Figure 1 (spheres, rainbow, N blue to C red):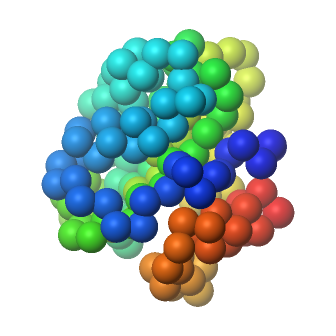
Figure 2 (spheres, rainbow, N blue to C red):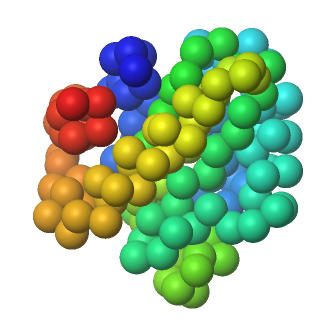
Length: 149
């Protein structure tokens, strides 16, 4: 896992979007420099959402897509100023959104990233720390320490 995965440029700690689709498009716009084709990537994420929700519960959603529209594995992160309905498994709105972008290819890198995120996000202390960070740089540092190691 490279440190390109998380970057302060790909983080918004006060995101103002109001729907799942708007949030996915907004987060994809944050990571444009790591995409070949933003629209193709967004289509892949929306197709994945249509299969089943990526709202894992307890205020967390991890939308993701594997697409030739992605150049390098990247994660965008948003803390929502107002939680949004993500059709989560526990019917709670989501306020911590992680968008995973992975290039098309044979490996399952997105599954590794998903697994590391999901495991870390089960830790209430980690979630509290994420909710308390005040700068994009603090969020980047926390995510790199916890997820990349």
